[in-house]
Each structure stands twice: as C-alpha cells, then as structure tokens.
Image (tube, rainbow, N blue to C red; front, side):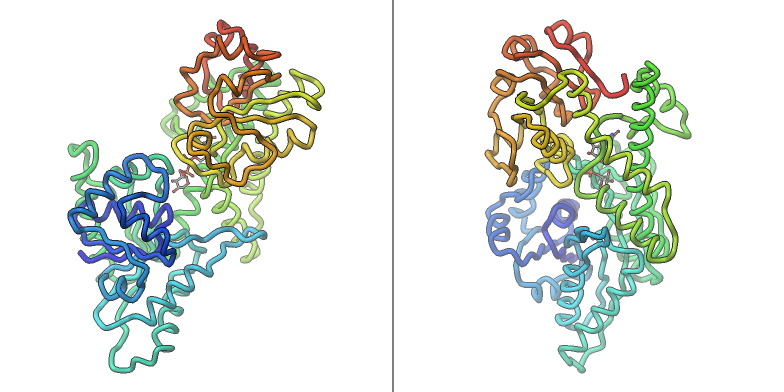
Length: 449
Ligand code: UDX
C-alpha cells in the first residue's frame, strides 16, 4: 500500500521504517531539512537498536523515501499517518499545535482520491473529530472546488517502548483501530495484515495478533489508560518498597510473590527511583488534565504522580543517611538516561537527582554508556561527564546507580571500590547483586530491600 508518515520523530520514523520493511511503499515527511538529508544518507537521527539496518535496507530497495515536501507525501499516500509531537504544556495539557499544522497541511493538499488519515501521535481524547474539522478547514482554504475531499480519520495509538521499538512493532500485544468508518478500518487491517499474521515476528506459531476495532474516543482513551495503568503500577510497587524499607522486607521478593498471581502479572513491578521518559509523565498529566476539564478529580492518578515525584529523591535521602552532610562530597551517577538502550533524557530521574545534589552542595559526576560515548551533554548542567566507570569512581564518596544498563552488571567493582573515598553504592534500580557488590568491598543500599 502507499503510505505517507508525517513527522519523523521517534514514533513516525519507527512506524515508517517498519511499514516499509513489511512491503509497503512509504514516504516519510519532515519539515526539518537537516534531518531529511541525514535520513536520505541512510542514517537514523535517533538511537534505536536495529533501526538503522532496516532503514538502509528499505531505502536501497526503494520502499522508503524521505522528503520535506508535504504535498508530495500527501499525493503519494492512500494512508497518511500524523506522527508529530504532542509535548506537555506547563499546565499538563497536550500541545496539539503540530498536529493542527499537519492536519491543515493535509487538507490544503488533498487532491482527490480517498485517504485514511491516521492519528498515531498521542492526542487528547476527542481529537479524531477535531482533526477531521481542521483537515476540512485546510481544504476549504485552498478553494479547490473541483474535487470533493474524501477521507476518514482513524485513531491508531502506538505502544512502542524506546529501546525495543522495532521488536515491539513486529511483535505487538495488540493493534488498536478506532474509527466509525468500515472502509477506513478495512484499509488499516490490510496495512497491518503481515504483522497480524506474525510474518515478521519472532514466533510465527503464535495465534494472530488481536486487533481491537472500536470508536475513535475509546481508541484514544486506550492509549492513555494503558500508560496511566503502567505508571500507577510502578508507583504502587515503589510505595510498597518504601514500606518494605521500614519493616525490613525485601521488595524484590514481594514483587516476585505477587507477580506470580496471573491477575497481577510480573511485569512493571521493578521498584526503584521512579518512571520518566517521553510518555508516562506527559500522558498521565494529560489524562489528569482532560478529566479535570470534564469536572472529575483523578485522586488515584494524582497520587501516582506524587509518589513518583518523591521517589526520585529517595536516592538522595539514602545518600544523606549514609554520608550525613552532602555538602563538599562527590557523588558519582551510573547512568543518566531515563532507562537503558536509549539516549533519551526527557523527564529522566537523573535530572532531578542532579538538581537536588547540587542544591545540597555536592559535586556530581556521571558516566552513561550512551551520553558519555557520544559526547552529547544534552545541555546538562551541574554534572561532570566522565568517559569511563573507573574515572567516575575515582575520589567519589558514593555511587548511585540511576539507569539499569546491562553493562553495569559486569563493571570491575573491586577496582572501582578501591578508587573511592568511601565505597557506598545506592542501587536506584535494585539491579545489582548485593553479595557481588559486598564482595567487591562496597556497602550496598537498595530501594526497599
Ligand atoms: C512507555 C510504554 O511502555 C509504551 O507502551 C508507550 O508507548 C510509551 O511509554 P517507554 O517510555 O519507552 O515506554 O518506557 P518503559 O520501558 O515503559 O519505562 C518507562 C519508565 O518506567 C522508565 O523510566 C523505567 O525505568 C520505569 N520503570 C519501568 C520502572 O521504574 N519499573 C518498572 O518495573 C518498569
């Protein structure tokens, strides 16, 4: 099928590349010329395992093209994905101005022929009808009265995790399609049929991927509810961890014990310094904002946010318990990104930890496998970036493991302990083995264990 993906951020690029890989002819549109140039040369502007290889293969086979020309993209696509950012405004509301600009642009470039316009960006509930209205406005502004605009809007939320976005696209738990139009749904089902039949997944013997066909508003709500649930689940286990700390229980054992109950499930029960990233914080706040707009106060979601805010500072509280005064002490952070296998620093717990340690007068150093290696500092202030873990440990009063990078499991902790003033490690992700660290000469402090 002929597909146009508008916006080559995280969601758009992964969607475009993966749809090209399963055989569709995809044009990705972005108004950033620099980015288009980079992608045309076969390079990915984001770090995502497996993405560059797929990108190169699809570009060579002619299935994947990049352009800054929206008109060309709209003319090409029978299915047009809107995949631009919807960042949170200071009040928590989603900023939909990029979606609006793209919808208007699509409208003004409609050139006859039926199109399915897909909301892939996470948009406020009710945006499907709003996008339809903006597309029509855009169409009417160009006064092209010879043709009738024929299109339908579908909500098709994505559930990709950063760092495993390609894997998640080929092995989805479900596909959600929201629309009140059968023709649009049928085209989307055709688009995704290779994925539904698991032709590109890891296990072709599994039953087909469930497709949830529903109305626009419910599809939009599914995305928010999924992220809000997962974020709440993490806040829940973090609250349990804080109680464990006080009563002398081990939250990793508790998570194991409750996770075996199939009604609870064992995923997203890893206690630590809380959730961050580009989705959970933004989506939970947006859902709270929408609820408030409709006169409902979200007590549970507010609490999930509060627990998360406090949880980020637990690492600092534990440092205070261990070192007492932090002023004049040197703290080394292992990891900076909000989670492993990404270079994303958006809403990363490390940012708040750095801020608080600076406020208390500590010197902060950090080593992160991606941030240190790529030399990118993300505009980070108040932190010295070291290029290897041993340099990080040198002359530190304590280390804090902030991100659960696999590489941190096999560091030379014996050597690191010997370089430190005071070999203490706060394991902010309960990721390391206590006995191994103790053998290496560390005092090990976990979260809720
Ligand atoms: C999330 C959703 O998982 C995905 O479905 C959605 O499309 C986008 O948001 P992502 O932001 O990539 O994906 O990260 P995820 O792997 O879900 O982790 C989110 C945060 O929760 C990270 O900061 C992670 O460290 C934290 N987390 C996750 C925990 O603290 N404990 C856990 O058990 C799981």
